[in-house]
Amino acid sequence: MATTVFLITNSRKLDSFADKLLVLQDSCIHLRDPSSFEDTEDSSAPSISIDTDNLKSELIETPKPKGVNHRIKDAADDITRATGDIAVYGYYVGSIGRLNALLMSGCTAAYSFCLTFSQYILKWATESPPEKLKIYMALYAAISFIAWVATNGTMWFGQDINLVDKQLPPALANLNNQIFKLLMQLVLLLSVQPIMVVTVPSCFMSVYFIQKIYLRTSRQLRFLDLESRSQLYTSFLDTTSGVTTIRAFGWKEKFKDENIRAIDISQKPFYLLLCLQCWLKVVLDCLMAIIAIDLIALTVMYRNTVTGVDLGLSLNLIILANTTLLRLVQSWTSLETSLGAIARLKNIQESVPSQERDPYAVDPGPRWPSLGDVRLEEVSASYSQSLKLALRNVSLSINPGQKLIVVGRTGSSSTPDKDQSGSTM
Image 1 (spheres, rainbow, N blue to C red):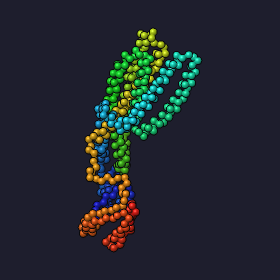
Image 2 (cartoon, rainbow, N blue to C red):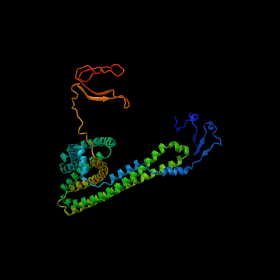
Image 3 (cartoon, rainbow, N blue to C red):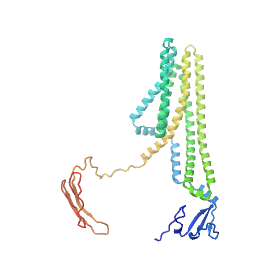
Image 4 (tube, one colour):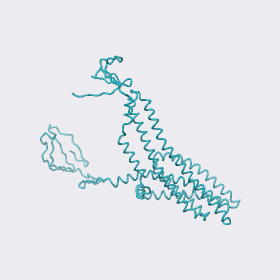
């Protein structure tokens, strides 16, 4: 056959068919003859020694495949995407449907109103006479039971949603939810303490700058986390694909140390992300503490117009707004990071030319063929390009219901076939 065959195997049953054998043994490559392979201690057989340290360094210093670099570049483009691209939001809302987006906004607004207005019911219960207190106690008992069931169900359902829909849809829903909750809490707080409206502009400016710093730093850390995890996965894939070679050359400890080092590197950005989230929580706690101090100061200044119930409700709303604001910033950051994929899809749709259909292509209707009418006009065919034409300029018309027998060049007729209208060929 004049063919050279390289066979890589760990079985010795095929050794007798080989002309030469390269044996991996004791971190060395031994070149042996099949007839003398039985004597594994034969020192006369030529062997080739390999420097395992050099091989290991060459293996580790091998550049990454282009596919890994391409994925890292795409992820970097996603993370470094410009913030606040309204067109991307419009593209995403258009893909999920405007009616669905409005329905989601209405449901989250109703949910936020019901969740926040319960704090105002507490004021009614406090100011109501003692004979009506039992009504509010019964109401809160039912609400607490429903909230316990809903919370447990939401936790179980949230795990499934996280697995099925990944990150973007939950981030969008959470952001929408936190926005409406914060608006409801702000409206309720201003209705109880109208004087607090003077602190709203400064609070919005502070939250904007805090969110901007957090978002920019979080994106860089997420990129570092992605790059380190990509190196870790590449190391794992190299180990699993070359485990036979690693065992043959005795590189197990070296690759073990390399994988442990890759794991340690991948955890550093993750730890910094946790530290950044703790920093965000501390900063927002300090901001809410300043707002609470301002509330107490304004209450002391206008003590004649503020009751104890209003003050307690305002402080309670500030505590709730702190948690809501923290989740709002985190959801906003997660959504901005995830929208990088939507931006790339939008860019592909706008930049890649669409494959238009052939303008001369025939688009048959849904009822085609309504009749089994077959027409051939000047058809030529041959069994191969080197043979003469078996059919030359043949024109044929078969009407529905006609019977046609096709006879081949051997003289035998083929089995008659029926078309969709009942005619037989």
